[in-house]
Length: 143
Image (cartoon, rainbow, N blue to C red; front, side, top):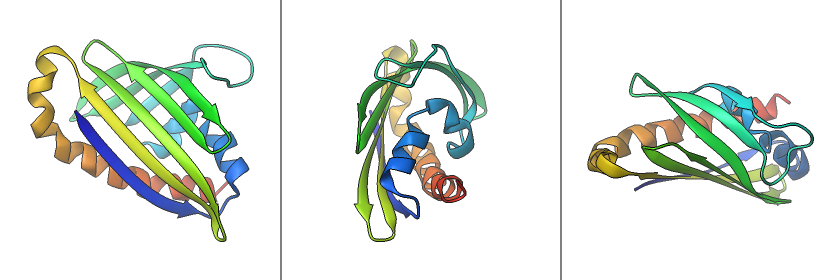
């Protein structure tokens, strides 16, 4: 199991931030590993909405089926799964005088033989967390 957490502040108001980030297809803009992310259902984004996410990790392409499991005014939780791993992206938001403080918490649980690689992958996930904490504020502040 790998856990990465970063907290940073953006200049946008909380409602604007949550409205933007609740559509996980926008991960293409703020997640450095995402190659593409396609919404699989229609209508307004809601709990249960689903996406097909293709990412590159350590020069290998991997696909996860994501769903929005929590949609609250100050919290979003997405869970992505494939046979190798379950990835949970939990984002919490807090209004601050400068805009919105975002805490990005990624939790990856490996399954089967992939569990053996867990200690070797921690550093790569930390690097990705650093990239998210740089890229996401740039994207959101440009809205």
